Length: 256
Image 1 (tube, rainbow, N blue to C red):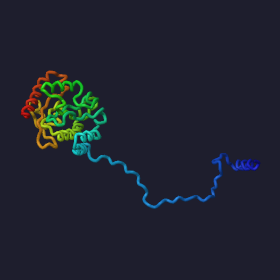
Image 2 (spheres, rainbow, N blue to C red):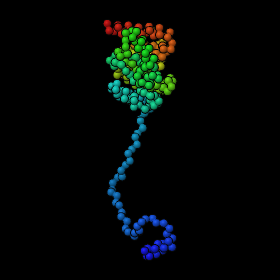
Image 3 (cartoon, rainbow, N blue to C red):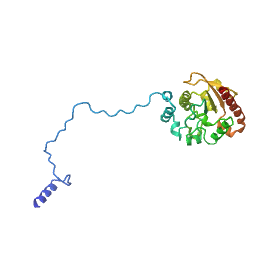
Image 4 (cartoon, one colour):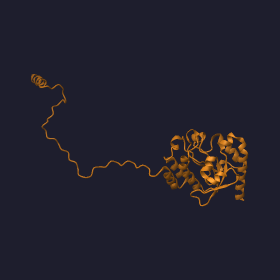
């Protein structure tokens, strides 16, 4: 013990004021050298490449690759080129009978469609159902879809850019369904699908024609006011009723 205290006193006199380790370190011990095997060092994983092309070019490419309705829905759900996807609550995709010769295209989704993810929902959907029943049809016999799959924030009108980004998917939907005719509700959907000259005359009664990418011939299109307008402005329903009767006559003439 006396020797230990003597050594401790000597270290304090030399200036040692703290203990680093419990055991002494042999500074003169040879250091073991680790060898590194020759060869190329491991490369870090390359970062994911950003999508190529503009959002519009990507929309055209992604939509064209869809071969079925399920593939088209998945392509829409994963498409990140349109900001509407990030602000909407749900994707609103086409529903109904894919074999139907009649496709109904409506305005961008409203609040009820956005909440439930189904086209023509809420009071507007109820009115559409009543209109269809009046000419002997049900929505289960038809195919229904909005012109855009996502609701713009606050229900505002979509911008031309947003329409242009979503339109390739609508065109691809039409090409996959191959309907004989299209019924369009609302000015936004009509302007998106009809040429400018035809769109200026859409207020006239009768069928217009539109060339759809992926279709071999032009499709007849019948335009009506938006269901939301019919709900708020009952006098418009008289003209809508006349056009629905034209749809019924056209369907009956083709069946006979």
